[in-house]
Image (cartoon, rainbow, N blue to C red):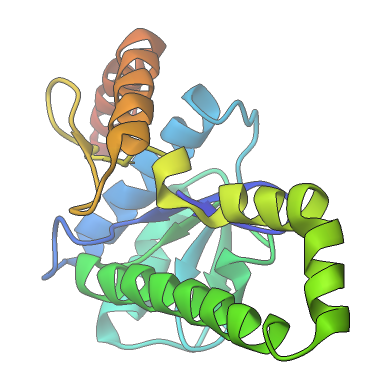
Length: 204
């Protein structure tokens, strides 16, 4: 789950399946749409396929084939670009695990660097220090909560029987606590049954 300017974007896969088939990406779209309905409370979530452009003709051999299959996903809106993950253009973004993991790690690096640069420049002038102090609770605290992985707990591993939440390797107590809460919500949601039913229906 990635933060966007309006709420959250579900990105999948982010590392579980690095070498994907077009069928895998299609199934990710189905699973992501159902997860967004059941766990994020979205009645009609929109789904995009991560590509190097929004045009239908964009992409590589894998995404072009997946694009055809994903026409059967009700909320499919077409290709999306990396920026769409964060600007709330769609609710669910589908990609292979190799690409998704790079997006995830790059995003973490950008956030960390931006905060470090802010600290460096704030320390350079008194007006900046005063401004930072005034914005500490109203702005910086909320911003940190928005981008802090500990607030999300972990990433659900969809498509398995049972409930598996994968937490960050650097997870602290807060992250583990939120992962437990996320696991409880997942178990109570009926998402696994809904995914299984939909995939079987689509394959008939």
